[in-house]
Image (cartoon, rainbow, N blue to C red):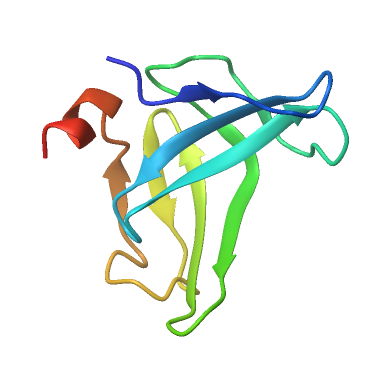
Length: 101
């Protein structure tokens, strides 16, 4: 099953993709085309590699930070993450596994 999903974008010409992050429990997205895009990926939905790193700063009452590299279908969490997977490398879960969890 796919680890990456194509996301609907309201921006004309934009291409966005997302994956589920087991570290913080949210989907993270990256944009490869359109205004503000800065990522590239190997277009492999099973073993994606995304460059550069993906940084998510989530504000609010309980702020969180998730910073990672995605390589060959695995997420390598960097040391500045605020969750318990920082410093570890894990497989990106398949989208169908998330719905059945």
